[in-house]
Amino acid sequence: MGKHSRRVQEKPVKPDISQGLAWRGIGCLLMLIIPAISIVGALVTIDSPLVRFIPPELMGRLFLPAYFYSTAGLTKIFAPITNINNLSAIIFVSVLYMILLGGVISVLYAFIYRAMNPKRYGEFDAPPPKATAKKYKR
Image (cartoon, rainbow, N blue to C red; front, top):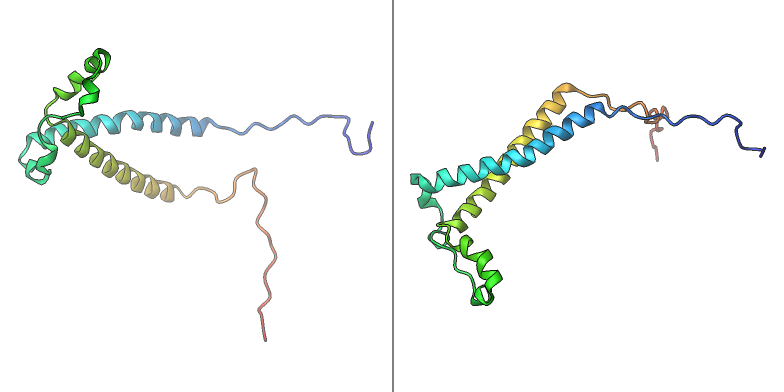
């Protein structure tokens, strides 16, 4: 046996991640729900009187450069996309809604996290130092 080795190996302590799994599940659902809500909101916005706030350059069908139609494979891929009316406006408005919804959810999460008042230090953190600084005098 070496000088610094132990005879009994300590088993590593596994942290409890059950709470983390719930938050991961909520985050996974939000990654699916927020874009769906944003796309539906964009479709409703474009069909409503709020369409006057969207730049007219985004309205209408999408026109792609000629090299997208140069081969049969690319034509099969991009022809259905160019047939969607107001696609640029839908993408633009849905991205705006995603940013707004993400910001609102982040602020709500911050308020909830602050209200729950979690412990500052976890069980694996070192205790805070007890040393106090002396007042500096010249």
